Amino acid sequence: MNLAIVKYNAGNIRSVLYALERIGMEALVTDDHEQIRAADKVIFPGVGEASTAMNYLKERGLDLLIKDLRQPVLGICLGMQLMCRYSEENDTECLGIFGAEVKKFAPDAAGFQAAAAVGHKAPSALKVPQIGWNNIYDLKSGLFYGVPENSYCYFVHGYYAALGAHTIGTTDYVQPYSSALHKDNFYGVQFHPEKSAEAGEKILRNFVTDHNL
Image (tube, rainbow, N blue to C red):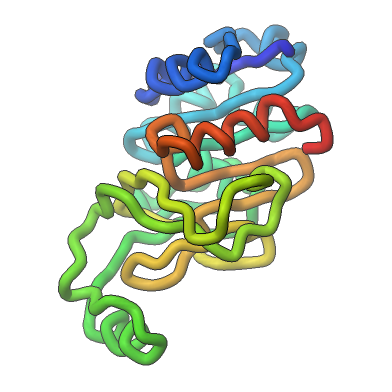
């Protein structure tokens, strides 16, 4: 298995490498277009700020490259958000792979009423960004094969992708949102599978080893 991790000045690559090592996999960290194109599967991780990351991608032509990939691609955290159409974080036009918009968590009065109506925790008791463990549910993809509904994963984010046609996993924080997305050969997870214990390890293993993705 030839596995590439996109190198683009957005942290957490080292933790992804360690997580892959734990499941017996090695990956090449690169921004070289030919090496990325030649990979069997590509991981697009990231933590940081959307507009800075997009500018870095554009300067190196990685924005066009990523959109043109035909092998399975997994975006993690900021990587997933950059695969969406637009982010409210510094008014950023993103890659547009997923049609979703990325919005800032806003625990306001309207959000409180909406959450209360469906029995969710009051937004006034929640802090932004979300940092810590939360459950994922309504799982709809082979990416989650063997991962039980309501498994807990680790999140660190102040922005979220709204629910939509490409949602394959949902999480509640302020309101329900997309904790995972899928379209064609592109997958994205808002949480950090590399920090999500057994569930995260299973998700990474599914992505790396499942030839049906």
